[in-house]
Length: 457
Image 1 (tube, rainbow, N blue to C red):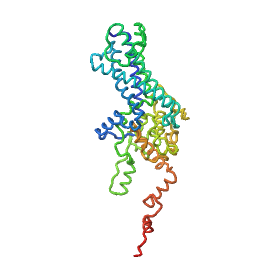
Image 2: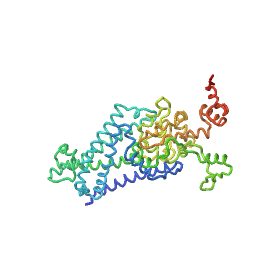
Image 3: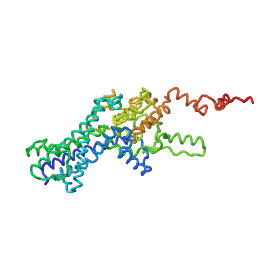
Image 4: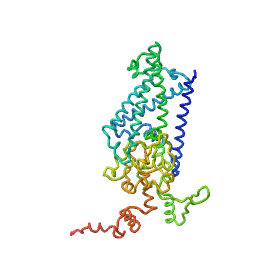
């Protein structure tokens, strides 16, 4: 029977879901700030990659301990959400464990839920220990790991532990009430059964505790859902589309600029007709920027990457430039892109951390004088990159940090002629000699003459 409690629940759920949809719409607007790029080819290969990397956690298992712990949390998240569906139905229609009609299937699901909930608590506790006591370097070090990223990670882990404990409180009180009334609760609860007497034997108090646990669990989930857009934990949603739209070409293959390609083809073949210049809605030619100076010069996929980042530091921990003490941190490149995008676009978060002030960058109404390049990311960071793709290979959610680095470097070279002296010297040699070396083509094989010693025989 539907009563006042169910009406209140329906209002709370509608507000929670509505706020989340509102935040997602703002994130979508921010991502679409980027340039358009076509990534709908080979759907079967993309689905396969999504199943392996996003669902199957394939790249996580390069580091076994965090992979196993993350698996507990990940599988727990997937399976426990089935119980959340039941809670939503019960909350709206005033039923109690509505899916209990499934019998043995429901019993198995509840048993798995409890075991996974316990494993989630254990895994989160170990993750808290690794971050705050042992201080794993990739999780603690780096100029980008400011106060908010560190606090955010701890908040997420604590919330997950509290949500699982609330679930156990609800189950324990439900089991004890049924025991006192000689009734039966649908399902099997191997963990709660061990603590069935932990909350006392007063029926009224048990009922209150049970309802508090039930309400706390579902409201906590709705609040956590709305916390996600301001958190690194948003990757639990973004990982799947990001992996689906990830690069299918070989990692070492770079993209080319269409305008430059057409110019070169016209130079090599006088009969080649370049396509007409792109025009805007008013018929004016669209000015082509070579490379990227700010977030709108990047593609929507590169901006999506920044919302998918888990801030795990795997990319930076394997970066040879970072390991040897240079300024480059691939994780910082991605986090800076996200911060700049939200500064220039719309901040989607209800819980809005002040990323900009932490960086020493004040948020201003006009952002025309400050750009991603130099405003957040320095040329020194970009030129430290060896383009080895180690960061791309290490990322568990297929973020392509290198593509952003290369687009920013292209702007420095093609629009500002701001390459380092050694790179400019190489460009000059290629232009004059057709090779990176400072030798004319006629002298290129002199080394062979010097090595050849005629035989005295």
